[in-house]
Length: 377
Image (tube, rainbow, N blue to C red; front, side):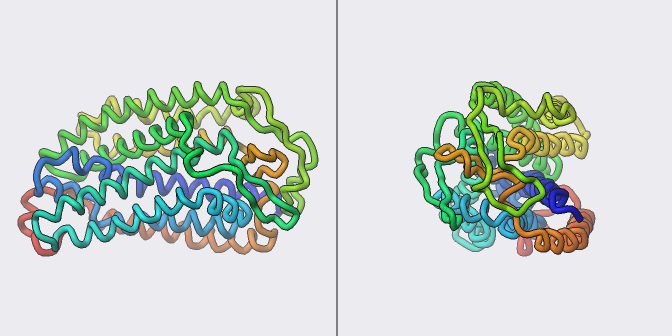
């Protein structure tokens, strides 16, 4: 298969993994965001926790797989991003480490300690939700890094500089849409009184997603973008030092939407999905509401990907070393082997996940909690 085609395929596949993570693990993160506020007593908190309990650990496979795919397909991006965003990554890692501890020990500790497990779960949801959005926000502004001739990276930007106003707005978009995903899941899988409260929160978070997403889009239109003007060989060996990149006029991040009008479907999905949640959250169309919420996750991530294309990690310090999907990939052979492996195992994982949901489907009610008090969280 042509090298250029393989590069594009892996840009698509990593996007699919990120969307899968937002859809599947998104309702876990959203549930954690809502846990201290949506429930009023221990039984209600157990309802919420056990509504995600059959799947939460399996859902994190999407995140792990995305990280592994990033390492294998875009090694220079992996090395640069994980070094530059080191403290942010550690923050996410430590917050996620707390999640299994809180899940497993909450039902084993004395009553007075359960609140610490609940707040640990909250941190394990809100921190990744915010940091992932902040990371995307910084991509649109460029990250302060440089590469020498041996591809070693150096950085001129620290952790706290990542927390700039635009990036924090993108973080709020992420928090709102993942909270919506969690609220929709709870309205679909938890019994009363969580079901009704979650439906109300789903409408509010859908409205917040629409407003914040629109604000972020308007802000992106005022940001200068990056443009490749010479030296890029899309079918050649990966070498991010061979091209010339300029910082272009404000609004240039939106050029792809005029060049490829079909990409306008991405932001449309983001708005339509959230609007669908707002309209249907109080109805009995639970599956359709969750579908609309999932479309929002896909639409927002695709909007970011289409806007940045072909850039993956732009550099504000030295635009010429900005990393793109064309010049920061693994070798032709590596991508070819990975494509065959992905073609076999990705459908297998999706099929197995679908079977798990089919076998463990059902609404978590107070009656079921009381009947299975020793086997549930």
